[in-house]
Amino acid sequence: MYQVITMFGDNEPWWFFENWEEDIQDEKIFDSFEEAKAEYEKQWIAIHQKYEYINAKSNFLSAFWNEGEERWCEECDDDLQQYKGLALLKENQPLSVESGKEFYETTNSSGKTKRCQRPKQGAWS
Image (cartoon, rainbow, N blue to C red):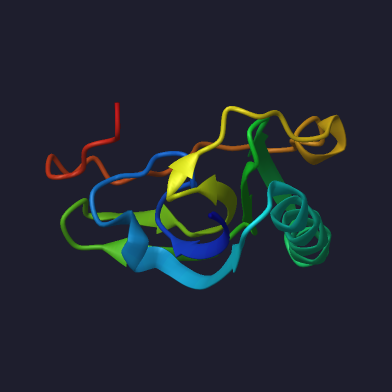
């Protein structure tokens, strides 16, 4: 089973911090990789039209954001950048397959990334 997931929150989609699923806005499920890949590419193009900055990994994980889309974090005492995430996963795990270069070589990120340093967050190993 493959999932194409869109998220919105404090972290880029490749971090998979504890409770990352709470940021999911939409999930589409597919039986085949080919169907999921087609949906990922369609959504990538649509999302790209709405966001100024992109940072993408080669395994179907992309983050999009606009300058000024931030939220105040009481715990951090700072504004945190908000990201629109797009991910193609297999059984809720990142893929080891590479996406087409046009979907990750277009990275145009800039500026300091603001991420909460709360100790309760832990990435998957």
